[in-house]
Length: 185
Image (cartoon, rainbow, N blue to C red; front, side, top):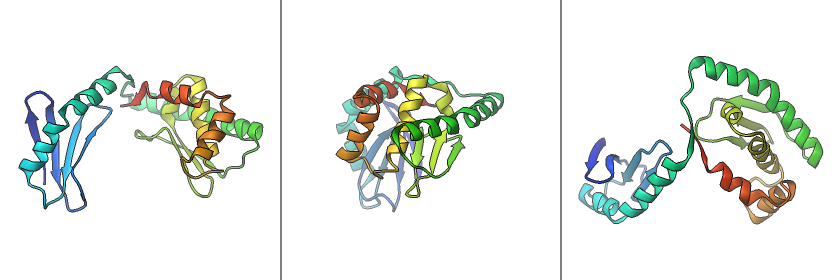
């Protein structure tokens, strides 16, 4: 069951009761969409009461996303231009940074991912979003370094963050904070 609930102050909320849900959760998407999911054994009334109890958090999350510099929805031509630009520059940059830091990786794939800037598989294959081309170069490098460090630590452990921090000259937190100012819409 999925429906839209019109909240008096939060606006439209997508609510869904699914068997996959094991607990009641609220998520706020970068687009500003609010989702409320709950398991079948929780009543809709209780789920909405939970939403009401978290209304301040929802408002704060919506405001945080509203402040972000959104990447505008591109046209097909924009996507193709970014894809060719990304394929021409990003794999080469991955190779340069991997060589500089002595890291090994598998292959590099460019995708039109809209939820993640990049990812790394257990085999060391790196996937990068073509939307990286909308970021400043130093943030592109940060994301590439982040993914390359996953070839050593396939998690976000303290050792992983220490390695990223070392390769970003002690600026990991600063760069991560700056990156949060951007969103793929």
